[in-house]
Image 1 (cartoon, helix red, strand yellow):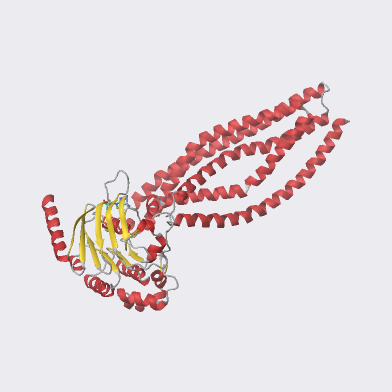
Image 2: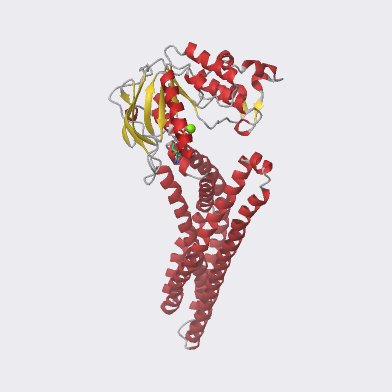
Length: 525
Ligand SMILES: Nc1ncnc2c1ncn2[C@@H]1O[C@H](COP(=O)(O)OP(=O)(O)O)[C@@H](O)[C@H]1O
Ligand SMILES: [Mg+2]
């Protein structure tokens, strides 16, 4: 009698639960897509914002493929958080409820069921440990694979011209094999532990029936009670099992998040707190290095070694020296893209470390040695970084650098679309676009790092001549090898192995360079 009543109550309870679950699942679908989309937008934006605020060196150290792989893992985290986790949490609450009901019904059967939980935990932990090694290898090889593809596409010209497709394929094959293999191992381990867990659940059910049936025979439990106990145990065990196996997944996601977070927290460029407002400050463009030392790694020799140098405002200043002597590094220091290990970089007497980077960079135009263009029109590329730049200014800048004639002859003129990284222009034209971009913001300080190297001598000479003419009130720093350009500058500094070997008039410095080159040739035999 009592047993049947228990069963009735239970079945009614279960039916309402099934209905409840149905609603819950429907809701989950909606919640998952909605919050997923919201989260995507928010997290995506936050990640990009923080990413872009990292100092330049962080980018150099971070392979793009690894970053993308971490972001992909974050995506997984997102879908887990919005997809399965909420349901798991609801289930977990019910696990407690069902177990409690089971204990009320019969203590022994409750204990049998409860005993399965630590076994699930152990199994999940063991499985996770076995899997972790494979997963780590898997992720690393995915990154290698993507890097290979990435580089091959970016350097397609070299790949095709040198016919090194087989080499690229070879580089791709090893990680390809290893990703497949480690993925397989991780997958089989996961499947094995899942099957074991399922078996454990069934075993518990069998034990429950065994003990229950003995109690029924002994008259300690009604048949209805036994059936009710089985139902309760099944409802408690299934979600508990799932939860334990979701745990490692969550753990992995947490690791991924931790790594992305560590990267993003590496410290963005600090906007220093200022003693006074600099927004009104108009720079003259006097640059000074005081005992500046910089190295790219603690175990590297200094790329710039105790350099003290004055660059007067409003002058055309040149920086020369053999490859690897530290010219580009010095340019980065002057642009505030890297910070000195020792010494200070001063602009008009203000330490760069004390000036907000955003403020300083608005007043400086930099053309790096590696040309960097973006997909978009020519006009967009020139105006990039100068807000509300009128078209006339774009044209003026193009005219100034000698690009206008060429652009005009294009059917779509300034609206000609460039491909990825400025594809569709010659190297020299790309350089001109980059210089025009630096000029259009009317910078106090203009820094050209071998930015005219792809131009013919006459175009180059004309450009520098124009720069000199327009230099009034503008500091122009020119990094170049060409004596002809050095001769046009007001002052020349020569670097050698990171040290300043001379500053002076163009004539004396050109002589110094020649002497050093001759000595080098002599030493090389
Ligand atoms: N991103 C970098 N990471 C590590 N070392 C670098 C990096 N850039 C330059 N270096 C090293 O710093 C030294 C100076 O390089 P750089 O300033 O580019 O010379 P230059 O422009 O005069 O040719 C070189 O020995 C070079 O190997
Ligand atoms: Mg260089």
